[in-house]
Amino acid sequence: MIVLLLISQVIQLNMIDLNIKIDVKTALFLKNPNSSDLGKRIISGSIYLIDELGFEKFTFRKLSKKINSPESSIYRYFENKHNLLVYLTNWYWSWVEYKIVLATINVNNIEEKLNKAIDVLTMPVFEDESISFVNEIILNRIIIEESVKAFHTKEIDEENKKGYFSTYKKMVNRVATMVLDVNPDFRYPHMLITTVIEGAHQQRYFSKHLPRLTNLYKEEDSIVEFYKRLVNSTVKK
Amino acid sequence: MIVLLLISQVIQLNMIDLNIKIDVKTALFLKNPNSSDLGKRIISGSIYLIDELGFEKFTFRKLSKKINSPESSIYRYFENKHNLLVYLTNWYWSWVEYKIVLATINVNNIEEKLNKAIDVLTMPVFEDESISFVNEIILNRIIIEESVKAFHTKEIDEENKKGYFSTYKKMVNRVATMVLDVNPDFRYPHMLITTVIEGAHQQRYFSKHLPRLTNLYKEEDSIVEFYKRLVNSTVKK
DNA sequence: TCGTTAATGATAGTATTACTATTAATTTCA
DNA sequence: TGAAATTAATAGTAATACTATCATTAACGA
Image (cartoon, rainbow over the protein chains, first blue to last red):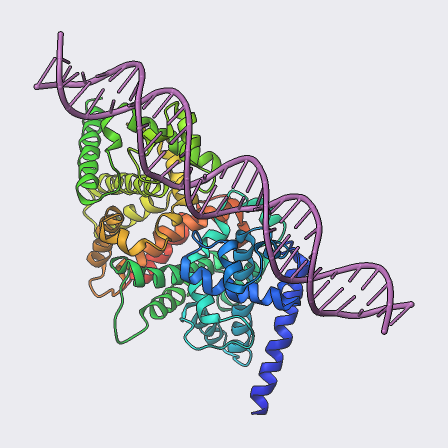
């Protein structure tokens, strides 16, 4: 009980921390959605609505009706729906990095440590681990279905300069370091990790919509199995 | 000279073949763009314009101005710009499959055959190998920057039923078969190949826009090197 | 507790997008 | 040559992605 409480407090603290970082490093939002009731309704409402409609059909007008606040008020928090999506992905990757830290904190064996991180990166989110107004199960679904759109735009270079993707890079870097711990001579740690992260999402998407493009076996989580095998056989000295 | 001519004829035939397949299997277009001058202007104009503006800012109205034909005429060929993008991806994958066939046709060693295919899938398109009104260098760039949007939509399941992605699946299947030739016990051939294809595109994108997410060395094509190593070490018995 | 400031609500308005409709001009090819 | 098919020219509509204005309410500090 005490342990749980402590962990929950750590998460709370950590989340505040991460949000401050987003706040400082980027110009992602005009007003911090964490700072008000309306802001939180925008975030949690948008998660449900993007999941329901898909990002293309999602609009601030529809969101305003869902949360019963005027469209113009939403625009006081986010310049446009694209920035809101990027904000959500940052939230997600902060959360994932935190889960990696938790999963590897007391693991001393470096191979096992890397494997634990790969687990977090490739396993589906099935339990509501939420400690806040964000539903992580649905957010995970949004990341799988929509997150490629967050960085496939003509504005990528300017947005990158503004730090829109720093949370993601930071998390990738953490795991890439674990790869180098296992094999310091391995030349492609970042390439490997982003291949695994994006690949695992892609395969989840394929398994749902284009199953001919992947291979699933009932008795196992094939995606986790495949990427673990891939990492271990590729990183090996 | 004679050889070149023959190859060129084969390509020509093959392209017609592939287009007939697209025609028959899907409802991708309302009128075959290959069948008229206007249709070809739509395709080649759209390739330049999508590359220039990005898919989001690309509109049929802007395209109509570029090719000097009314917007409504474009709508007689494609229901919407999304279907045009899917058409372009099909064109691209038909062309890639043809390149794989060419690159592997006289290779008897099965490992070498697979490696040749991985080469085609991971190498950049730098020469204008075009035999038609399609500029493959620019098309390759569009695939890297925009193609994820072709299958990340809410309509994916209906579109999949209509056969919108059959060209891609067919090509993946061809290479997956080569994987099984090398190791018949390997359980994840499709997963491996789609990981390589999409991963290689992703890494090209990262190397251009988010270089911290990948690892590039000047003296080599790191992306080709990495994915070859990955395939060979993962497929190994 | 009053008064100022800040945040939100209510409403309206604009340019652009994603189409559809109609009719005239032109091309095709039987 | 003449009918059928294709393309051009033009107009129009609902929805999207915003911006602007002003009224109302909440916050909070003197």
